[in-house]
Each structure stands twice: as structure tokens, then as C-alpha cells.
Image: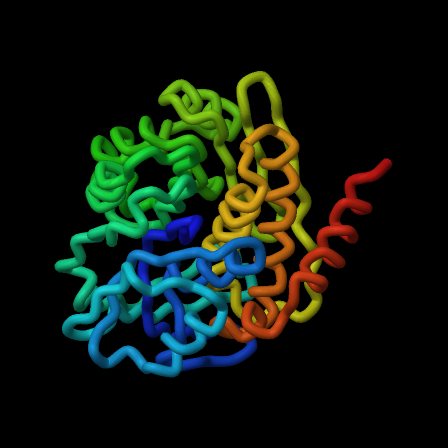
Length: 299
């Protein structure tokens, strides 16, 4: 059985940072998350790609033991163009072409319906809910989102959040969701919706984990060779859900280790454009950086 199942996008990105520009490179939330999860488990993706999507990208994913049974092929591929300034915690979107994504139905193959771990990456909350409704008996549903859905489909988003075990947002989204400056208040209000864990990403400054009565602050890994943060949040989520699927438990210990592993993977991802680093590192590299991050928190 493929586990976890990752629902999101495959994309062709054009990205510009102070360190260069790349056009039409492999991207999308499902791509980054599945590659990250593949270090720990055998993920399957649910996404859509156009007939123009390069076969070499599909081969790359398959070679990493990522199942593509949930991939639809039609029309033209989703394309995103964005840029970053020296503060790389925020992307500036220049152009978005939904293309095939505009008619994406997020249908699960029969082989995916029994999956126990699901990552609903950043897509329309109505699609996220459709996926939840197709699952037989999920144990862990992790949901990510973005400011666009909070602004435009908040009611639908809150509905699907009530079905999730883990909710992931960045700090700006957390403040927006509950209209508060306090991340702790936002996390506690989100926990009232029903999830067992709320994770608030803070970019290069790490992440916060909130569970009932507990709080954990995970470090970010200080980088010198920072090139492109695109996909770091998805890599973080993919690493976490892949680790949880491998462990088969979701207690505080597993969550904390998974968050630091996800952060380590995300830090590697930022060292190159597209998936350059995710396809060149090994599990040993991740474990080495994990050890360094653990030492950063000892005192």
C-alpha cells in the first residue's frame, strides 16, 4: 500500500531570486512533498499534469518510488511565476496559469482509499474535502493552506479543518485565520476546531507545535548557501507526514522528531532551485543535519 497519499499540484515554475533565475522548472506542492516523504516511506500522489509535462520529471518521481496512479493528464500544466527579494520568507507572485488545475477533480484510485496517512497540501479546500470523503479509514489527515483560501473560502476551509488531525500554516496565515496578532491564541482557537496538533511555520526561524496543554519550538537551520525557498513548506510537510507514516504513531515524540526532520529537509531544499537538492541528498545527510539541529536546542 502506498502511504502517505499526497494531494496537491504538479507545476512548471519560473522563479527569480537574488541568486539567479530559472524558467519552467519542476515544482508544485505534491512534487516537493512526495520527494521529501520518499526518504521515509512510499508515497503516492494525487495531482494533475498537462500533456506538456516533461516525461523526464515523471521518471524522476517514479525513480524515487513515488506512485503516480493518482496522476491525471490533460490539457496544459499549471504554471507559476514568482520572485523573492533578500527577505526570502515571502514570495511575490507575478503570474499564475491554472490550466488543467482549473478542472481538477482529485479522484482517488481504489488503491489509495485505504491509505492511513494523508497530506492535503495547499489546494482548494473544496478539493481537500472531496479527498477526505473518498478515504476509507484514515488515521492521520494533515492539512496545509494559504492566505488565498483564508480570504476567499474561509467557511469551506474551516469545514475541512474540522476533519484534520494536524493543521499546518505559516505565521501570517495563522494570524489571518483568527484575526489576531498572537500566534498562541490562533493555535488555541484552531485546536478548538478538533485537530490534535497545530503547526505554525516561521520560515528560516523554525516552527511552533501546539498540542493540548503542550508547546514545542523547533529551530530553523542557519543556511549560508540559500538560493530558492520555493517548496520549503511542502518539503517540511512531506518529511513530517512521511516520518509519521513510517512510525505508525502520532504522539508528541513522533511529532517533534518529524517536525525537525521536515525542517532539515526544507533547509536542504532551499540550497538550490527547484528540486535540485531534494534529488541529490540522502537519508544520511538528513540525519546528520537533524543531529546538528538537536544540538542547537541543548543547554
